[in-house]
Image (cartoon, rainbow, N blue to C red):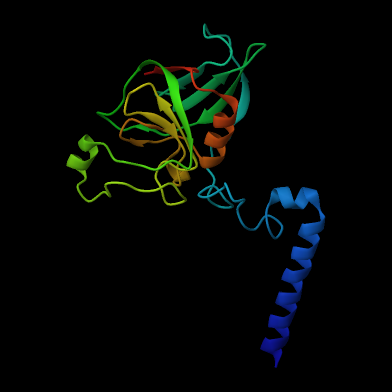
Length: 197
């Protein structure tokens, strides 16, 4: 009898929460059921799964102009230069030993929930990988991808937020899904990307 009463109270509390969340615009932004579940684009970055490296606005006095993306692989941070001597600073995951690179390129293509075709070099190392994986929450490219010129490299999302700040990739630049969505919305095709060691 007591178990049924507790179950009924739990259901009533959830229904009340759902009703309250549906009537409050602020709570709807925080998430479903008081922010207990991740927003639809938060896969891998929901409560308890977000990277400990938070996006922030910082001072910037370097030589690159507003709109430039700077990837500092040694620091494991990405900067988007803003006006007035500021930059947005994001945490990133970078290439592991033997897969780090540097250079200047441009964003040649942008994709939302991109499909993934592992390149032949990767398939030689990992023949167990699928030949193609459609976009979605299980895809290693995450929520967005920014393709760099006609290289094999991308700035992309990740469903492994714990990899942010680490050197674990095959040369691509990883961001949390929340951060890559933010960056994706701020840059356009043709944006200059400077990758520094």
